[in-house]
Length: 310
Image (tube, rainbow, N blue to C red; front, side, top):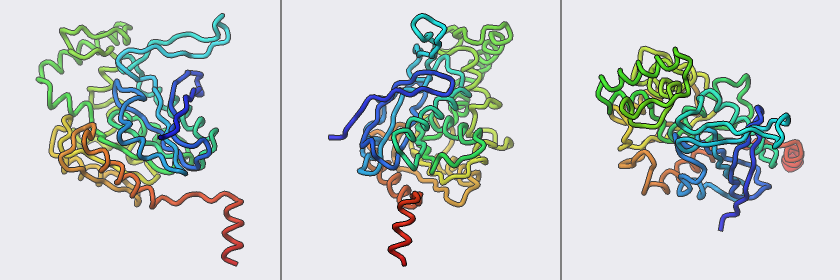
């Protein structure tokens, strides 16, 4: 049985996020998992829990984009209760604020004693991982990045939605923002998903910060992806239901734009976006890749190694 503990994450901006720590509190490696759009910390355990080893823990947590609409706490000592409640969830999340969530999770993992930290994103968690890494002045806090099913939401919507429907929804969202109502939900008659105006534009327009994987408009340079400097593993699902073209073409796009020597792009045959039924294959590929990431020796281990080699 895998040991599990409740974890409370306090982000630099004082948001309170709930998480679960699987594995030893003394683990020297930690994998921080970023769930996808509208998902939560209870998802994808079929391929996350097998990653727990004697020396490796897994941290899953509810980022502020969990579920469709959610309420999260923000510490505010000026209030009688010591906090205020903020409306969040996938429908109302401001994408760029994911950097604060991730920084809080990294700080928590290091406070537990982790010396090597990996970011593992699934679906929209991939965009968040890459965006976070692109905004840091240094990437030394992270040993590597794992991207599972990194699909463009804009490309998927453009492929699966009639053009007139997408255009009407875009114009409506733009008008809401112009009228000072960025967090008003779009009418269901305009867009079937529960989403506010600013998040719709973030997800489904080509020039947003969230459009990290820009294979649908190859004339644009994916600057965030180019800024990745750490080892990166991309695992794509051959039958991903959100793809707008063959997965081989998407794999080629990633291989072209990952400007690092230790980058690997793999395709899991017959898998869908969530890798349901293919979880063991996902685990095998992640663990095989992680074996090639050198573990940083602390000063004590360096001294021991020097003595052995003397």
